[in-house]
Image 1: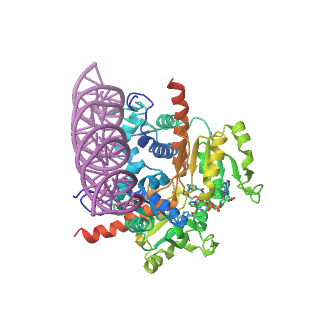
Image 2: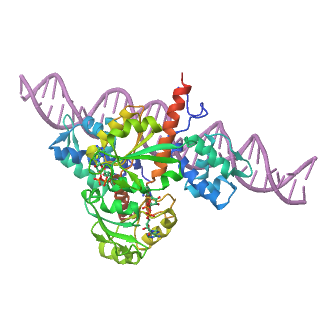
Length: 221
Length: 221
DNA sequence: ACGACTTTGTGAAGGCAGGCACAAAGTCGC
DNA sequence: GCGACTTTGTGCCTGCCTTCACAAAGTCGT
Ligand SMILES: NC(=O)c1ccc[n+]([C@@H]2O[C@H](COP(=O)([O-])OP(=O)(O)OC[C@H]3O[C@@H](n4cnc5c(N)ncnc54)[C@H](O)[C@@H]3O)[C@@H](O)[C@H]2O)c1
Ligand SMILES: NC(=O)c1ccc[n+]([C@@H]2O[C@H](COP(=O)([O-])OP(=O)(O)OC[C@H]3O[C@@H](n4cnc5c(N)ncnc54)[C@H](O)[C@@H]3O)[C@@H](O)[C@H]2O)c1
């Protein structure tokens, strides 16, 4: 019933989607030894306007100093806290095909506080294989994994046909956040959050813009 | 100066981003032998509301029949045409690491009219290697490739440090559409379209929602 | 041939997000 | 210690996107 402005923690989705970008820029600055940034500098590093940045940050609280800017370390820590990154998030990857293996080998996970605790596949020929120094486990291990690690995020890297089944198993085991790489619309109850990453969709959107660019140039004059 | 509604081809960005989802659902229906769909059915298959679907389609023209619905084949073809998928789009993938190899092996490209014409890397140890039945080529091949194939879309799968350099080379060769998997903000001139796919960002957004879900439940009652 | 029924296409309204511009606030130099 | 300067935080406004609701349109059964 309350608006975003009323509740201190009511951050609009559009803002949330930009916070990781700010955090990344801040982390880079921190490693460069930069201690303080203005909204102008940070905005340009994150590729947004300074007004937008300030508005986004204002949803989190007042962590800037007028006339000076933001303390890099402090702001990074506040954003991380707002995103819920103060604890490690256990992640399981389902589907050890081409994409699943690339994801398993990706070290960007750990760098941002996501701990891959399991690689899963339903195919007996793949189960037991070693991927990125870890043994692939059968789907039946899911329940135990959730119990042991409090598994929170499931990544689906199966073909489209298997994605709903994989999702159902994740949900049954208690997972409530899913990152889906398969090109299907997953049916989930409302309390579950699904984010879709679809390469084909992205390419098609690019095709549209490339296409339109040509058309616009041909029509405008 | 004209609004989206004035120009027949003025499709809002938000709509464009959903068209690929409609197209995918239609393709699946077509393969099932379904000849006709209502906006209600198609909307549910694509995971949007029927009002939204109808409005999106109305930007493309009037291809439905009142009282009946849409002809699956016809609508698919109209959407494909609006997206600019009537021709093949040549794609080059830059950066043959874990991710680049997975992308190279992905057959979803060809299925949707995107033809991978080259795999590129700047590392001499990787150049010449065979990936997905294709030899990896050096960055210096870019210009010739663009000339020969009219290369239109570049995919960047290099580490963040190399992404801007890779992007610059693509643009210099004439590419105007870029799909970027590296977690950096690429600097490009306004006529170039860049879309970013960042796994870490997605996970952090999921973390926020998982986190918030807990908080909301704890605070609400 | 006609009427009832279904489903589209779209005007109108509401809500949300982005951008502008400025007052408030705090710093730094002198 | 004080004033000038810098930069934040935010109220307001504009435009876009989404949802609602219904008249128009065309079909199918009789
Ligand atoms: N490869 C890519 O670069 C790429 C890019 C974008 C999107 N995708 C999408 O990612 C998904 C995976 O692609 P891929 O190329 O890795 O496929 P793949 O066929 O190489 O691998 C799929 C793996 O998932 C496993 N699997 C299938 N059904 C399962 C189930 N129900 N439960 C558990 N495991 C199951 C299979 O055993 C197999 O090991 C696809 O949906 C694809 O569209 C892939
Ligand atoms: N591996 C994953 O699953 C994954 C997931 C999400 C995002 N990413 C991102 O994708 C990118 C690639 O990841 P990866 O794991 O494949 O990295 P990687 O280190 O395995 O491979 C990078 C490849 O790019 C090449 N390269 C580097 N600089 C280049 C340049 N300027 N021009 C041409 N080629 C260049 C290198 O020679 C190497 O072969 C990274 O930015 C990473 O953050 C990877």
